Image 1: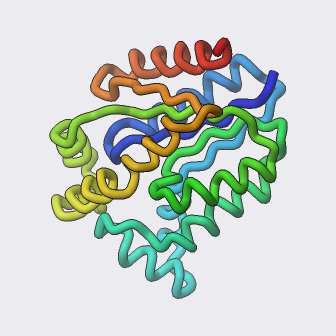
Image 2: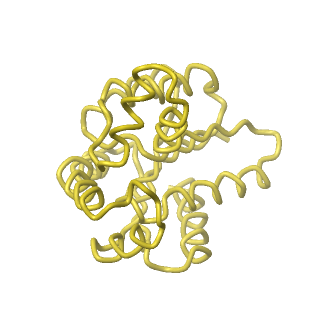
Length: 201
């Protein structure tokens, strides 16, 4: 069986982090001998900001709460380090937080070709702006200020929605539109059903 390459897309607050962790756990049960690499860009940036030793870490710490996307080069460096150190053509790959722009999508394609990745599966978690606002306000994270929330929503609609259109137009990519307003368990079940069906296409 060819390995999974699954990218989670959706606005912040749509549940991507929760669902990628649940899928990771489910795949480890189903494929106990397989290697699974999980790449979560937001988690990588928060870990970097927590260190605050050098200029890069301090600057990320100062700007991470604003909602403005971090520099493109730094995003590429962080997920590139994960791929270089952990990925091979036989590993399952789960991604959250990249690509957020078309430029990142094209760079990721280069990586997929290098690692001989086959068909992509996009899990698109659909949730309205009002639902996303309510969820992020309820998380009580320091970076979830009203201004930061609105900036993230603006960036999602401006920069990331075109990425979905890019993937929908590709013959080697399956886009699963999942209702992100349902319960965590219902969303998880829909994802498992969707990735199972995509293998039969």
